[in-house]
Image (cartoon, rainbow, N blue to C red; front, side, top):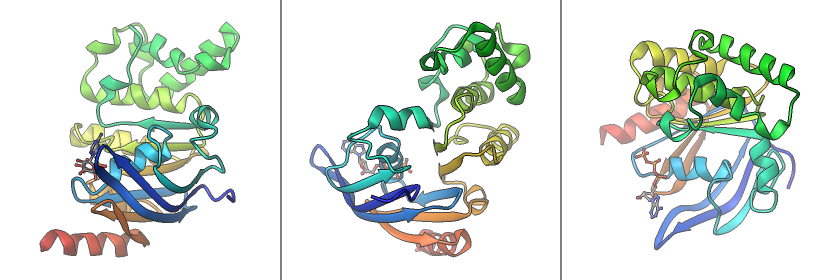
Length: 230
Ligand SMILES: Nc1ncnc2c1ncn2[C@@H]1O[C@H](COP(=O)(O)OP(=O)(O)OP(=O)(O)O)[C@@H](O)[C@H]1O
């Protein structure tokens, strides 16, 4: 397959006896892509699939030119996945240790590791919390920590699945601003927040496990709002 950032050809995914995705064909090359659709439409399944966390049952898939089922470890080194619940991603006892943990595979010298961690914590407003127990943070701070751990690796692609779902308006804005800030990454954002979806360069709509629309966010959002009114 070519090196289009995200390319799916007739992809299906079956979990148990449920076809969670069916016949999905897509070429996504915009820097920021919103994924919208009703509850249960297949958005998270799509995010897990392109993040290399779930396996297709049929079709062909290329993410940054990589087939996740053949070179999954390489793909996971080049991308980051962020979920709505940051607790699932926080592993180490303190904030600083947790950010450093994200770089464990890079085998950096201590001085360089410290510098990378410090720079990232500064960017995400976490520097003053470096020694704090990770699980004592507020929900908003935890999501910033999860983002910091994702971005410290300089991922080429960030896949965020409802990253602002549990946040108040101020923290949601902060998290969104970090996700959209162009630091050389692509973003795939699964969201029910249509204002956030409208900030993306491209939007994809799912319904019943099928991709039912792709294009300019305003047009796709208008189609989705029409569905919601029915
Ligand atoms: N492990 C699983 N086994 C069986 N069915 C599953 C599994 N995970 C998800 N599904 C089903 O797949 C469908 C799509 O789920 P998915 O979580 O992808 O939807 P979603 O669009 O992200 O929904 P939401 O907006 O509620 O988060 C749903 O019908 C769901 O019940």
